[in-house]
Image (cartoon, rainbow, N blue to C red; front, side, top):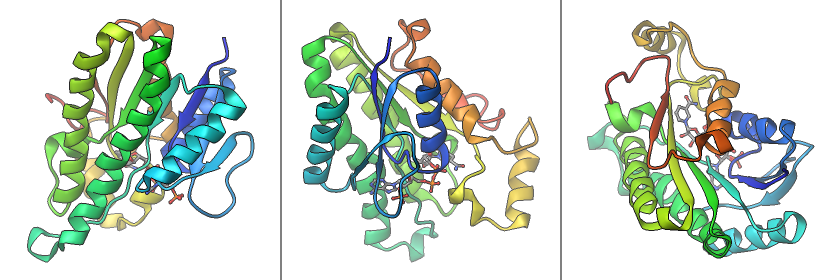
Length: 234
Ligand code: NDP
């Protein structure tokens, strides 16, 4: 059965791997992008998730082409790392506005149709950092921890409507986001990971696809680490 799937930030990195995983399984996949040329093979809709109007417009485009969104993957996210005493209010609120409030905007819009259909799958991309904490990433970690409370509240609120809300918490993944790290920083991270390496985006995508599959029909409010063992215990 081909479903209407929307992946925010599906134009590169983990989001693109997620979009490919659903497309390979035969789903109708839409992705959001902000600028440049989006990758081929998907319905690409321009959308900055910090703007509610753009979110509304993007959903309308997807609905016209693919029908109401049945699987939403809220993947778009940013970092703006800084030690607390150097972190400006804008460093903090802009990261929260994308990672947490942006997710609220797309989840709320997607739920309109999911409520009507009395079914839906929502997967949020958090991070091991949201649960472990990370020096220099208080804004990012707070936004990613916030996603857990958000998803678990909605799992309780909307479980009776057969809509599941789950969180995937990746560890360090080889993408543009982590390319900014120095070799020394990378080596330091890898030394703490029991599996001794970074993840490939496809390894995150496989878990997301599982959570949206029939095999995961009784899983909601879960936080699934895909982190090579880095966060064991949370
Ligand atoms: P990238 O930096 O490679 O990609 C980020 C994606 O988010 C891009 O598609 C980007 O779009 C999109 N995006 C950012 N801000 C907005 C916005 N305001 N509106 C719409 N789209 C936006 O990151 P990754 O692929 O590595 O990360 C994907 C997700 O996984 C993020 O939520 C990240 O926090 C999380 N994560 C990543 C880890 C890692 O190690 N890489 C580890 C744990 C979690 P554009 O191309 O337009 O900039």
